[in-house]
Image 1 (tube, helix red, strand yellow):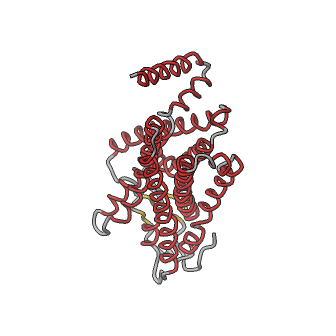
Image 2: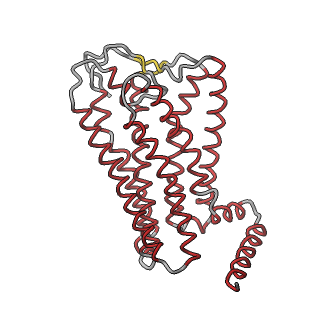
Image 3: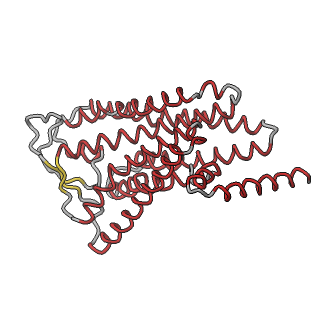
Length: 330
């Protein structure tokens, strides 16, 4: 990443949360535990999909395992650095490391948008076109879709990050945040800043965030309408449950991301930005595996099989079948 001749800043200082030492220690413990739990949840999901032959054949779980890997990369981009700054309150980060974090942070955020769109498309095909679903969403097609998500996500923000990195940074070098984010970095650039980077980032945000959000809303909207017309009450209830939890994840991600854009600039904006960023970089990745997978019967059965507890899920399956049989007799 080449620097312009007018750039004299070689490093930045991240102010972090700006709290006293005792609170820093509590935050350090809290985020350390949350980070380890997030990694454990996502590693469990990836392992189950890789080891269990039943889950490995299902497109939804292929997508979810890649989504889990992406979530692990996402939290690792920001949380370890945040923990380091909480433990050692200096906050010094080199110019190159800051822009590398900026690029990876935005890349994985956009990749998450594409994965959420892919999972919405998968549910649309499974519910609205069940007969054609196995043919359209074959394993080969699913892996191609996964590759497309990664390629689009990794290439979307190369332009904006490159343009911003080539601006002049001649001081100050203090970032009132715990990550190298777009707005704090742009505020530190010396004039003339030009409009290319801002315009490019605006266009990419519209295409990636707003575009994927509209696609997801339309996909799940059609799915809900199809389920409402369905005559099979049992399968409809199960499908509604799956779609509901998918929509919870979508709401968590786009709700927190949208909060960054609707928050007015000015005094207190950096404080709100830190809270919102903390939510979608630590809390959301922790909740997503619980919402998507670990409450799912197929995942629980796969976990029981992996741990050698086949009798448990067999008894559970028989009990469920008996319960459905009693309802049918009534």
